[in-house]
Length: 389
Image (cartoon, rainbow, N blue to C red; front, top):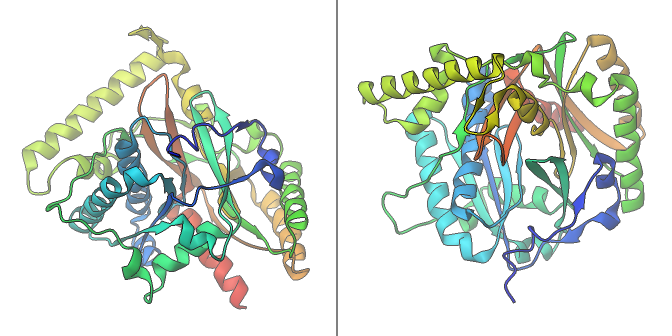
């Protein structure tokens, strides 16, 4: 029996707290594959100021696979310096080619190494659970929620020098190609309304699923108690969204769609997106209706379709707040860490950055949010350092 529609047919969860109930999750089919990507030595790249390129390449690995899948709905989670995806078996060969092309892009245009692996779910399920649910975020975006430890194990297999060659993408096609259409990186960094942007990772460490669920529910409740309602802590608030025009802000996207060394092609593409952004500013400001779409609502659509809170074997959030709120949260998290109930890591910046996958202006889209200057990648490093200490 074909399982390609497995994810599309999952029931939709409606509230974020629904992800803290194990009963809402189902096992991923054994014939599917997990894809894991990440930038090697991402911390070093971030320290060199290349955090926007790190984020962009993580998003590239998602859009390349989504364009292979086309009308087949597949789950994905953006991790800052990489991504996790799940695909049915009929997409495997084409996804390998797309990943190889994305690795080539990372190497040739950005001088970075994108590590990638395709792992059979059956190999993961031999020792770990890989469960999934689907959460409605907005009318235009539903989010995959992964738990059970399976995707963390798959990541270890891809990173471990002893196993990485077993799962790295291989293809006889030379050169491999990928379609990155839909990828956009056109917004200015979003300054926090309250002073800082907190990139947070929390992983429960209790022995039973019931206890794990309770820890995540309590952590989410504490975050809401300290930071307030969604409209208060959301990092991509409408008034903070401004389209970019400066070269350094538009160059990452330009490098994806043009060839280095072709000065005319590169300048033409940058001129094109500047003109599109100028039209976007005018359309939004004057609430123009173009092609049946009322542009005055576009910033709201963008804000609603962001992934500022998500879950893949751990809670990840990008939160707008102030230093006092952060200190209260850290006191709570540190207490739970010392009790052995969770481990956490965080990174603080004054702004968030956004990389977008837009298939339809008034339809399917997702906007990946991370803290600037390292975000999730540095939060993960801090969490590992905390575990070692």
